[in-house]
Length: 261
Figure 1 (tube, rainbow, N blue to C red):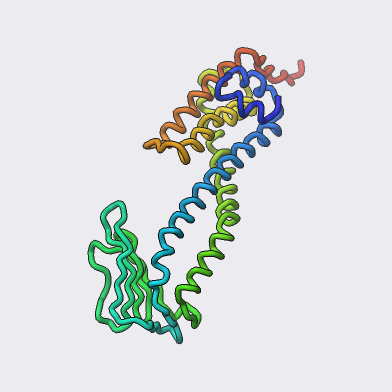
Figure 2: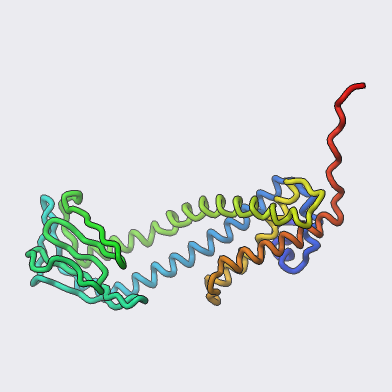
């Protein structure tokens, strides 16, 4: 049975576990990589969709950005200051703002504001209750305007899929492997007589429904506390799969007695 056949059948036919439990662990890792690639591709596409959505939301505001010049660690802007641009409201009711004030008239954000504040010698970035300060002395001399920002966004969008995909590939390879190792403990409930390699194989294949459901959850319908559903589904399939595999897989022979008479 090919990996694609197993991918299509394992969610509906627990009998698949009786076949895969006897395969070599090398084939199991290939199947694990297939699940990792599915999760990586799905998540990368979802993140890129959100980034493009954010870029489209930002586009109408770009022409309103004044030209900002940073030289010798100090900022100046060709706009009357203080300049305050309201960008909307987040889901928690905070006002999202962009502020430019190199005159020192304003000290900082209002309590209900988040966003970016450019001062003469530093940039303040506030996210909810966390505020960070970036001295302009760390930045090279530059000029920032609408066209330059558009170029940055275009270049970032071009590179983002590769950086995001590489990070997610490494993360999912680690996370799915560790998840399968933990699921081996669930397989011990009904998989008595199975070796660790066999239980690991069952656990990897038991991840299939949860991974595929994760794709649907990202694009079709949002499931509250999805991680609980993910683990519940994976544990259930591991227990069922281990039971099926143990019912047809002969137990490992006991170690030979090496004692000499």
